[in-house]
Length: 172
Image 1: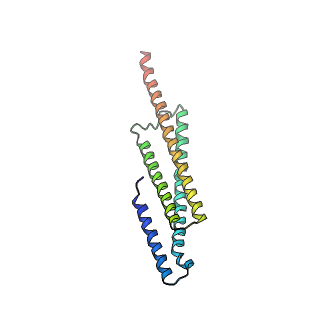
Image 2: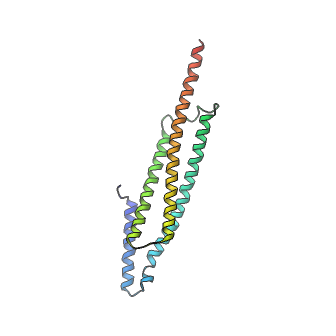
Image 3: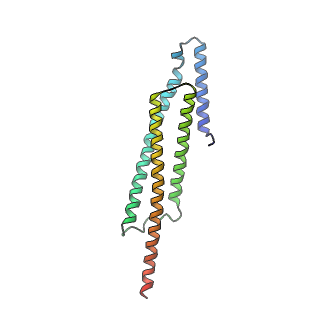
């Protein structure tokens, strides 16, 4: 997978922080204090990934509601022919969402590796990243399931429309 611009920017930021740590050590600060900028960056990253996880979970909940609605529509005769995705715009939007989530997953793994390369191990950061990766995985599964439900609904709806169109012609 190609490196994203964001991953490269994060790598440059971490390199700058590592250089700052070296400068602080060279200036005579104890190693614990010289490491403080990296700890602050790690703390900020944890706070940021918390927000991202929350937003992704909201997207997952929305996808779950859409999936339930599509399944319900497929089974209800009164509205089984509604919401046909003829131009497949909704499926393309879901595919775009999945691609974005996949890229975010890759960035998270890159950041994990970059912090690890700097000998920065944090149980809190690992938990936050694991929660983020789990949320991304759940939403990716939900989006794929929604795409499948939409395809199934569309097939059933088109079949119902064909039956309805054939009924008046059979009476003549």
